[in-house]
Length: 402
Image 1 (tube, rainbow, N blue to C red):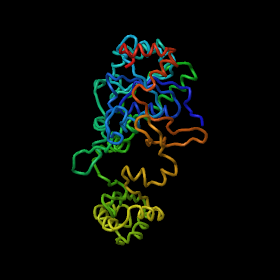
Image 2: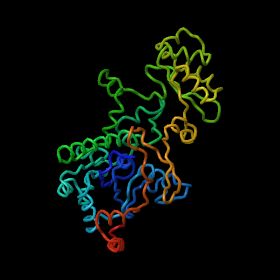
Image 3: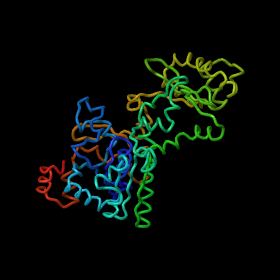
């Protein structure tokens, strides 16, 4: 089946989280993403846990594998003149160049936008640093945790009267930053096709987070109020939380928005018919007491069975799954064939995420497993640059293709 970005070539300097996930999305949709790597400075995700079978290795990171499906990898030392020249030749036949370095790094490598534009005038050039290309903090370094901190996400995450907590993952790297970056690339490619003109895209990874904090920002703008940590509670809904169930570390999330949902929950769980709890305002005024009443009942119930009963009664509820749960016990993900098995050249059979969308007449699942370091060096140099195997061997020996 066809892939919608077939024919688009991306020269990819991104590494670690947000940048790699951006180009993974393009690669899974058919773009030829050529990841520029070097053994002299590894993408740190290559040595990030978890390792397949707990065996360390630069080709065994599950984290790296998830972020780099469907890509090709070549190793090249761009600090070497011959290596830089080879990369420039690849760029000359590409549509997109991507990086998520601190501003100035690509310029120091001799691959800034002005240089690349001379090579390929219609290039789409993506730079996605933490704070963007200009401004008093543009040189700041950061990861998902620090981006979440400076944008206000961490301030809202955690329990009341406790310190700010992380989200359990580098949330900005996984959702808002790569999706905004990929959307910008697609828009620029559309412009490129219509006009023949390129674009330099400057993304500050802090800014996509603003779209995730709308209610908090609006509350301050309109009312001058600063939202604080609420745990699992909600300003308009009660009960709204995570409640214990039978078994070790088994929980169910329940969110009641309407009075009808409340009456259905009350009847199913056998909760007290308190007049104050018949309205949202009353339930909110006693939400801690209400949470305790719900917990007293749910702790004796199986989480999965209770979820299905509540859903059938029209009450929003969901089992709190761990990794094992989503992989082995979620029938919806299995029915949608979300999990894809591919044979990695070193790790063997490996499980990958599919895209969260399905096209009516195009493929969106990963095309191939993440590449070994430099797996496609010979292939790219011979097929795209016209080098012979002897040429490639010489360049490897000369510390150029390493």
